[in-house]
Length: 119
Image 1 (cartoon, rainbow, N blue to C red):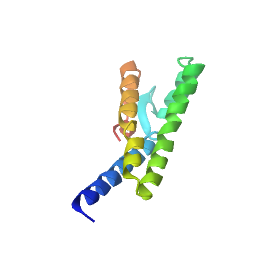
Image 2 (image 1 turned 45 degrees about the horizontal axis):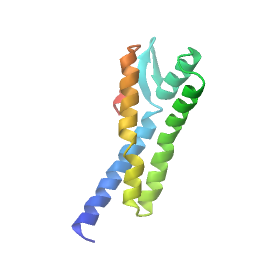
Image 3 (image 1 turned 90 degrees about the horizontal axis):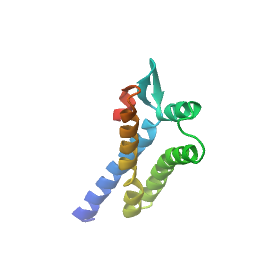
Image 4 (image 1 turned 90 degrees about the vertical axis):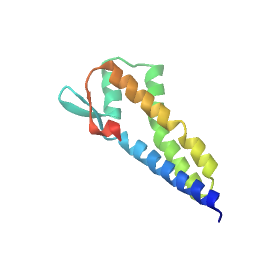
């Protein structure tokens, strides 16, 4: 095994681990709203209950939320099968998507960030 292959494998292992933490962070508290810590799915539920998101937008938001763990799982399988480039392609869009969601939610100004958001 040459040096480049070893470096690529370490990179993919790190990327898959970061993807796993990203997927797990969806269940951790993201914001303190009204004295209660809320995860990302709690925020989606609250926005839906307040009719802030409805119809097609609600379906898209929930689908986007579900894509993250599925993409990470697919990347894990790909990495285990030795398909590093496929794993990287599956993980690449997750960072900007999750960061964008966090910025949008933080921009709403309805609460203070909780520890799960930083993970």
